[in-house]
Amino acid sequence: MVVGMLAPKRCKHRTAYESISPGDSLNKACTLGGHVPACFAPRSSVNLCRMATDARGGTPDNAMQSGATQPVGAPLHSEPHWWWRVARLPRRAFVLAGLIGAVAIGLVGGWWSHRSEQFPRPSIPVLSNSIGQRFVWIAPGQFLMGAPDEDRFAEPDERPQHKVRLTKGFWLGQFEVTQAEYERVIGTNPSHFSDKGQGRGLVAGQSTAEFPVEMVSWFDAEAFCTRLSSLPEERAAGRTYRLPSEAEWEYACRAGTTSRFSCGETLSLDNANVKGRWQRTRLVGCYPPNPWGLFDLHGNVLEWCADWHTADYYDRSPAIDPPGPETSLEDVRVLRGGGWFFKAASSSFRDAISPYFKSPAHGFRVVCEVTAPGPIPQLK
Ligand SMILES: [Ca+2]
Image (cartoon, rainbow, N blue to C red; front, side):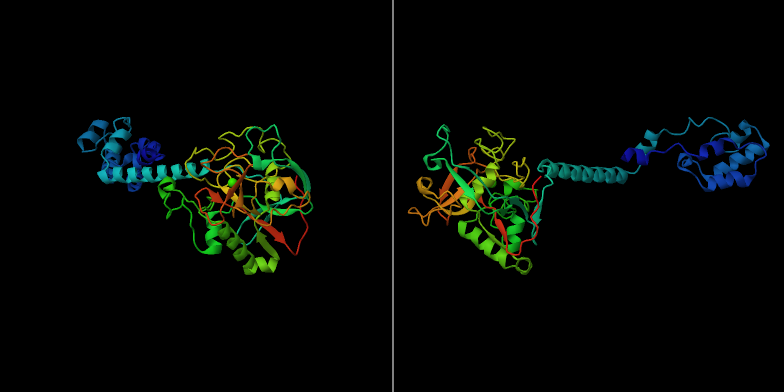
């Protein structure tokens, strides 16, 4: 493109130049010369006038003798080729062209890199709040919670599989809470994979604003919900926020499926950010969503839930709206889903970590409760 701009074009004046003939006025040639087009650039307007003068009263030979560089009507192939013109350009033109090319390559490369992290997001009914978070309506229903006996990969605390009914629908975050959302509400970004985090070398040159926030404890996640609920815009809209219960999380993750994962019995590296494939978190929503339009449940970061964890809770869990155990002897809270460094974590997988613990693989998503409800859209 750069060469094309610098190279002389076939010029509309070429025909006019060739048509100058004996008897033409001097003004015609001078007018032509006065607007010397690119294709005539090596010739001066003086030469053009001189050529016209010779053409009026003399022969081509006379014209040559009078000092014209080329007789009127002679073929123009003797003009310098475009590459000769380019070769004679000042050095600064090449430097400028190189700079323009480098900038263009950088812009295209950056755009492509950003695009490669994105996945087309489905158009489904969602609720958006004042900081741009999106929530999917999860209608009430029932499901089988936990792992079946035949699941040889399941841990003991995932059994027995039992029927659970959720009597209330809820708005669940479509994505994990991002670094930008957390910083906007709390004022800081503690994430390992950010420009000031210890993992900045692995995200150099990228914006991590839409990466999941991590290095947050269960208490940090709770504080986020409290702060977000107290924003004037959220209070005015009647919206409050909380962590999902473990039952709500698994119900939403399964999205009506009974397989180990919401995408089937196996999970590939194309389905979620797991098994250290990227050695870091990724932009939220860059893998296919589950059937209810929720992203990254099986990977990226594990997600804090509201519940305490006990290994035997499923033996005595109520069948309707289970609230989780009242306390935990080990003082551990539930984390759900898989993480970027983690094995492929099924829909029923449960992790249990101290609520004080912070990790580059731990984040959260939130539930939005609307105390002044409007019409609830139906999922398509
Ligand atoms: Ca996740």
